[in-house]
Length: 114
Image (tube, rainbow, N blue to C red; front, side, top):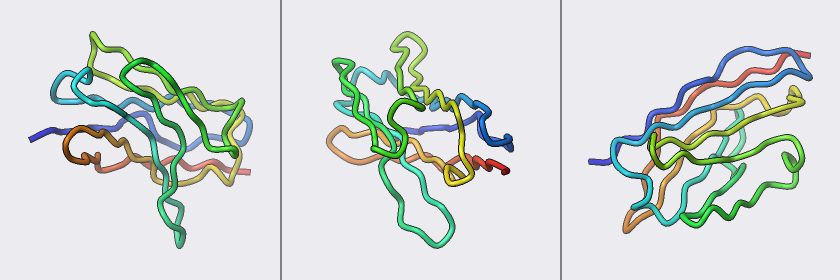
């Protein structure tokens, strides 16, 4: 059973930075795609950023230029560097991995105060 464990969330002031980590229980090379999603209270879960096995990345328009997704295959970890945070970035952030099935972490809370 694949496990994805997020960490790095917390409370930060607007304009600040956080780095989220997603540690996988097995080699992330086996996943064709890994991603970060987020869900704010009362809203649907939405895509934040993706990274393929080959390292190609894609971002939601709302985070382009501020967030960076990366992966460390040796550490089996995917990161989300979040800079210039805004109150509207407040959400639970989830790690996602795709192989023959979809895998999700339990999420980490990010709260940005104004």
